[in-house]
Image (tube, rainbow, N blue to C red; front, top):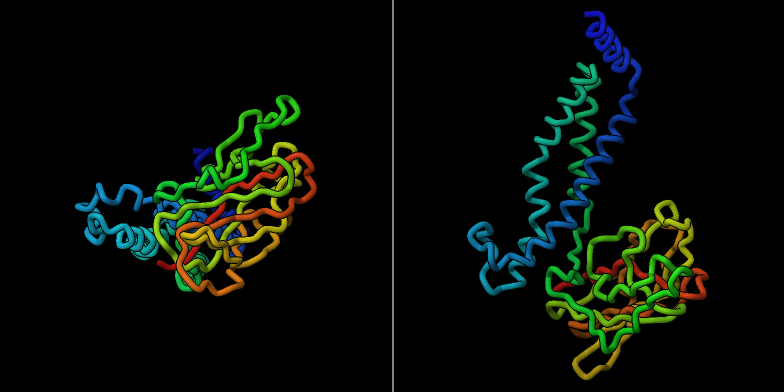
Length: 287
């Protein structure tokens, strides 16, 4: 009985002391993390879409573009259906922590506003450079992978293939590395697209085992490659090593045609003389 009363007192005290805004921010942050996970994973649904046409009525057998479009829209459908479920779950958490009345209603209202804002403002750009969608890397036209020098570079003692760029896993060390500061990869997309943007990924200093991210790309360019091997510059960009780990850049030159091959050309890094490491590349565009 004393222990139970103690827990009740703690809960009541927490309800009196907990400010509304921090709780709203925490709940919003958790929601946005879930939102990102859904948007990232749902795009991979199309990889097995042809085998699941009964479960996905809008995914037509043999029509990869229709399949991709359904997988792309699916996160919004899921999010809209789960909006009230999220609010109910949050309400239960607030109740368990002794937050009642107007304070709880205010937090729930703020959370609903965050959901609506995220749904309205998100670009939801599809990523065509996913291995699960059928994207590949043209090894013959791509810089050779860097294998490291044994104990000098333990993370790269065995070279990871360029296809690492097409995987969602961006854990520390799971990147494609090439020797020096200049290199390129030619990505073969599953369809011809009109490119609109590219997203470059690298880990932050906080999760880097050495605390050093000098191997991150700095200056890089995106080029469209046509059937005759002609290359067209779509934009030149700078990846900010102190910015977000995933940075999106919109094309600077309006493409005159659709491309199935995109060349990612790294021209410098942030100071590493031995190698450059690229974690992930996303190619955005319209079919």
